[in-house]
Length: 282
Image: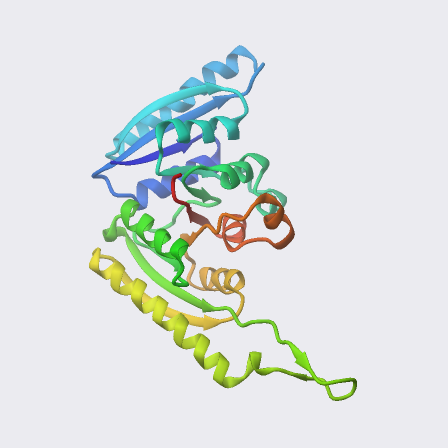
């Protein structure tokens, strides 16, 4: 049984996240736990509204054909979501990204950011709902263990009948180094045609392997490959194909590394219409 924890506050981003599950998730073998959190010291009418929010989401999930049950907790939303996912041994956390103002999208929101960084499982974060019954999905593939797990997580949750998948392999071109002295410095072979060809062959191999695996599971899938920055190229491709979901692995970087360097998964969570950041349970 695949266990999905859907965190909701009843607002539009949460509705978008549930719409994503309704559109693309398998009906068989998927169980949804709905969690609504009342902040500590909130007024009593907020408590009633929180219970009603959880109940409405459960009803909606059941009407869509899922097994679902409600949970209500009191506390800090991000902490309660992470704790509930740990206790239930959830496979996925599904939640909205916050409000639609540009600064909320860039910053993702404090609760969403905390869940993304601390979750014990894969996380789906949605900014916008899917628009089509069968919509394009983008999978980033680089041959790593994280990338392979992202593919398997996608196969576990998504219904092949509703997905058209593009697998994008991005060969990261290394920064050039330089040799020589003043007036005669020159770039090394980092950007040579031979090196680029080698990187491209590797990216193509990873994407074609991923496509074969997806086709074995009944998905429609096609490969693409390119050179450059993985985060930038994935976002460019997601925009050009109007991807309704971007799927990537999580490198498990610590918060300092994320703040200083950023990560592909963080970029997808902030800028893609919706993203699945795949992370193994401990």
